Image (cartoon, rainbow, N blue to C red):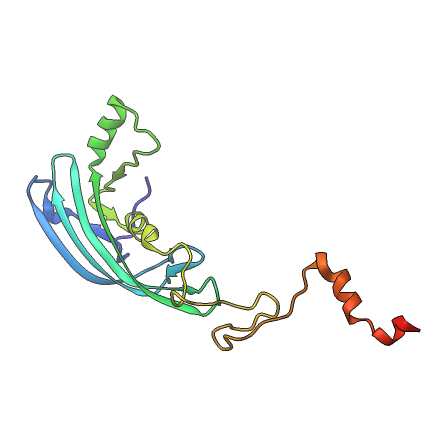
Length: 191
């Protein structure tokens, strides 16, 4: 397994716990996210600040990490494409197993794909995948700037919020032949 960059704000050092079950450490910090945390539609942008509250507890198997992350997600409204800025909070609880304990668990029973085992690398924990798993499900699948956003006109693209009475007269193609008969000059028909 690769070594983590201990200078990263999302990498936590657990040496203070001394692998003694029952030992606890609480951390509160504002971190700058190195990568987007979200989806292509809406995410907490890279370089944005995020508030991180974490409790590290030493247990027999490893370190139990419990906490929350909060920040501001930015994206675009799926109806009108205006910018969207939403508060986001995610909570998490994960066990980071000591390398020797994780190896023992792999020997006695192979974990399924659903059982993702997080491991400490040395005494370091990388929170980025845990934060991603905590934040992404809390983001709206289809973000909107407001609940009653009317969106854009499908014909010309105008913001319908700016002109609520905007419409185009669209003739159903099945009736277009009849409409053409009504549009012909009645004087021509008599001659």
